[in-house]
Length: 284
Length: 307
Image 1 (tube, each protein chain N blue to C red):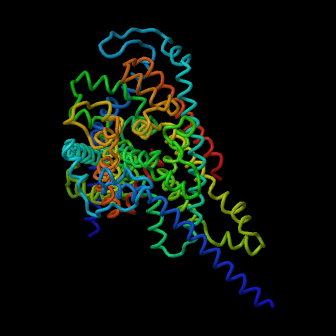
Image 2: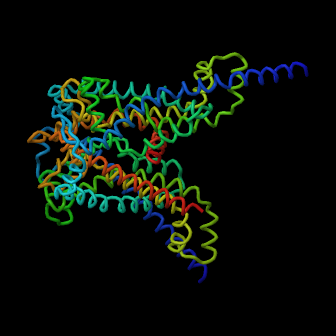
Image 3: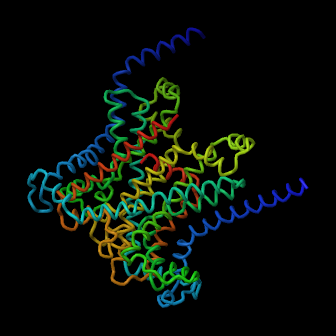
């Protein structure tokens, strides 16, 4: 009797556990649904998406017509290049200057150190929209509207990066630096040959997050560019929706083009990317 | 041998002392570009934002000091308060739901023993976080399409009549909030999951041995241990939702009939559509101080609850 009750409980437990797993898996499928739907729609012809009731799969699975079409309609290749260039350059400058500042704050003493570090941390709490108007005036004044410099101005150095690099560099034992100094290394040499190689994981995290942020940025490019040639990918995407009639087959193809590079990055560096996004989200 | 050591020590000492002043300058040189940059690109504009909120004028028009007039203009504008209401409605619908769902998902994921499987699942929940809000808005705009959209198609299986979603005054904010939940749930899940995994299993087992039911273990053991994470995540989501702009701009542009016009759109419109920099700066200051207040509350809370 006792034994039977036990096995009954065990089966019940197993059943519940199975149900709970199924629940979380179906949740994940639900999360994927918009991605799948976007992909499928991007393969459909205009008349296919206007069916009631809708059909899930495209009539021809490898219909890439929409992808050719978006590059014909708008200079999408230019948008991609602009976005890549702006994201790439601001990632590199962020890496250099944030780690330099991180090194300065972590390993040196100079008057006002605490004050400046605290000030930079405070920037993390300032929403970008709180400074966008004067920054815009500033950019207009210097004639930087519709330029790469204008697009990159708020992205050159990341406050989060300074914070991240300071934490990482502070963990390096001073002995390494002292030893290098005694060996006669220059300060610049110490920075590049001793410090940077030791904080590679943090540099990678910063590079990923910075690139991702700039790639996905919308508000600032919206404000600062109005010419076709200087648009970034998010603006190109948004322009699908400002038209009176939205061609969803093209819009989804455009979205796919903008997302795929990021998704490849995500699949390759999934763990790091999750970590980097969470870290920056928590601090920023 | 000993002599050598002593010489080395002496050398280090000497170098160190001569380096002290030199070192200060080196250290400052490393941070100087960053400090200058932030002064120019963040601090000066922030100060300017506050100054501009007391001025009238915009592109081409001369700036003129008008005192509190822009504040009066904004705070007596019923339209402004409507955008505040819309934003708060959006926040209330999306934030608690996101956090609750994330907690549920994290608890379920935490039960899964197979690491590989769990990682794949949590990466799936996280996926919307890496794409741009604009792309997300485009996808969802299509899903919500009233005639050909996926949302109504799925509802039809349950015998529910087609809804108007983004083009309905009463449904637009809930629909936008749904997008936000989809976007953010993975972020909170990852934080909760990390916290759950750091809780020693012994604690829960001990409670079970003492005869606690699963729900009691959750209520009296697990939940209190997640307190800090819950507050942290709530604040992060609150700030994120308060600043909502991209999705709304792309999907509805504030419509229908301003039902989804949020506070950031008010700022954007007054600054870059009508070039009323004074009033726009008032909104900027308003947003800044609101978020600052939230951050201060978080700080106070976390200090209180930490031990």
